[in-house]
Image (tube, rainbow, N blue to C red; front, side, top):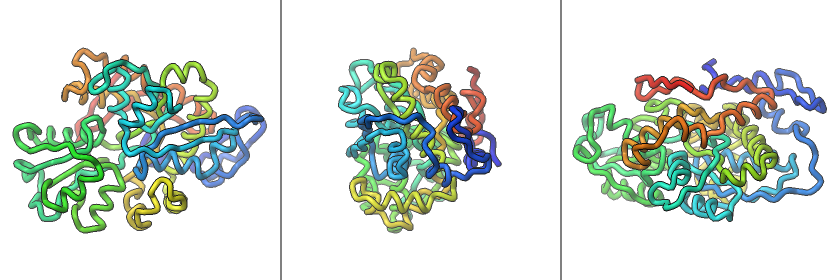
Length: 381
């Protein structure tokens, strides 16, 4: 079994204990039993209405929808509405305006909003209380691109859907490690996500990094092939998170903790490899979020354990990697205090407390050693 924070977190083998004393469950309880067990929380007489913006069908949106479809929010008397958006910038705008309580937001976008960095003109302090997905993307190449090894990327055309995405940073990490300058040695395009696969089909681009299931779809239709899964570039990297305005969090701390508790619980169940088929079938059982438009075999491939995971703990060391890369590529001010930003936004201590309440062994530290293409980055708290 891997260390805490890895792909095989000791969750399904340990189960959970309710600290309030109403519920005691054996330590060997499985993740599936957890999802169907008696509620962990004090009963609430009136359902609390919560709005969450998500971007589906995507890797990280899966944990949001899975948590809702498993009925985990219902157990705490929360009436959760998941609103599907065409893009995460729209989620950010509605979160800023207070039209949403929570949102699925990719981590570089979170830091841009929090600091008021381009394209945002004002700071909106945010809190990320849990990670929605880890790994979950791939460096894809067109099947007839002639790319067989890293040196073949020179002179090729690469694409991402947004520079404020982990996918873009993953792409930059790969190029850096191969000694390639993204401005001089390759041609780089930013394209709408729903246009990138067609662009590859028409031979307008040679490579892209996108979230699942886009990569698995490109594989299925013989358009692209995996050159390297993102987990081999930055193992167990975060993608999107559960995010709310800091002001909303501070004014509604109990409610925010309850939403986070449910979301972490759903993420831990989804992260159990034994539950992936059930998760895919649940996602495809409702039409509103478009997972039903993706063939089951494609989703199973996209959500293969290790290729896409859902471990919810937000490591501040991972936030530091994101902030460092954003500063390097002028996505954040060069003067940004990395440690301060990571601590302000990634609420690791809250996640640790909740995981302990669920009887799960959380990471002991907010920091871990991060590995980028085999090179270690060590941070101190």
